[in-house]
Image (cartoon, rainbow, N blue to C red; front, side, top):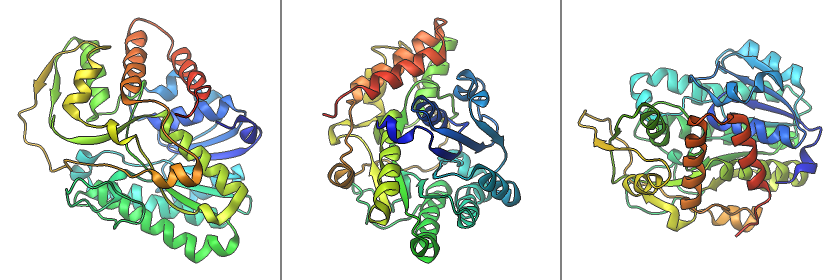
Amino acid sequence: MTGGFWHGRRVFITGHTGFKGAWLTAGLLRDGAIVTGYALPPPTDPALFDLLGLAHKITHIESDVRDVAKLSAAVAGARPEIVFHLAAQSLVRPSYEDPRGTFDTNTTGTLNLLEALRACPSVRAIVVVTSDKCYFNNETGAFFREDDPLGGKDPYSASKAAAEIVARSYYESFFKAAGVPLATARAGNVIGGGDWAKDRLIPDVARAYAAGAPVLIRNPGATRPWQHVLEPLRGYRLLAEKLFTDGGIFSGGWNFGPRPGDIRAVGDVLARLKETLPFDLQPDAAPQPEEARTLALDIHKAEEKLGWRPRLRLDDALRWTGVWYKNFGDGASAQDLTLRQIEDYAHMEDT
C-alpha cells in the first residue's frame, strides 16, 4: 500500500465500526491518515473496533446514515478529502426480516451521504462500497463483469443494486461537472480475524470453536468468491488514490475478488479451515430463505487499469484467519494480531 499518499490525508469513513471498517481504519491510521468515522455502535460483542481501541484514535461519531441532519453536520465538520462509504445492513437473511430497513440503510443511506457530499467543497474522491450481489444473477455460473446488468431477488441484493444506480446518477448529474470523481467497489465474500457477525460462515465457525459446539452448515455446495479482508481494502485504497490523482477516468464500477481458482464451495472452505481451527460440522435442517448458489467476479479491469491483483491465495487467507481466531482464543491481543497481519500484508509482493 502507498503509505506516503495517506499521511495527513483527511478521510471520512461510514461504517467504520463494522468488520471491514475496523480493518480499513486500522490500516489508514498505520499510514498516517486523519480519520473521521460515522456509524452505528459496533454491531457485535465482541467487536474488532472496540478491541483495537479505535474510538480513541479517530474522530468517532455514533449515528445513523438515515439521519440526514447529523450526517450532513458530520461531513461538514470533517472537511474530508477522501470518502469511503461502507455503512450498510450487510446480510441477506436479515434483509428478509426487515426489507424496509435494509433499503432505507443501503439505498437511501447512500443517497443521504451523497447529498451531504455535494455541499462539501473539500471532497476530492468518493468510493461507495456495495457488493458482488448487486449483479442480476441468473445462476449460469458466469463471472460478473462491471458492465453486466444490476439486480437482486432478495432485498439485500436489490438494495445494493439500487445503491449502485443512485451513485451513478449522482456522479453523472452532479459530481462529474464539479470535478469530483466517484467510483463503486464490488467485493466478494471477505474473511479475516475479528468478524463476529451473525449468519456469516467464518464467524459461525469462530463462535462454535470457542464454545466447543458444532458448526451448523446451511448450503455446503454454495460457491463464493472468498478473499481475505485486506485484499479488497487495498483495492478500495488504490482506487481512491487513482480517483484523487487522476480524476474521473477511474469513476465507475470496480470488481475486487479472488483468483478464479479461489472461488470455491462452502464445504471446501470449511475442510481447509479445519486444518488450522478444528471444529465439528452439522447440517442445519431449518428452512432457509433463498440465496444465490453461485457468485463469481471478473477482476480483469482492476488488474489491467489499477494494477491491483490478489496477494493471498485462499489457503493462505484461511490460515491467516484461523491463526487469528485461535491465537485470540488463547489470549493474544486482537490489536497485536491485526496490526501484525496488516504489516505482513503491506510488505508482500504482488503475484
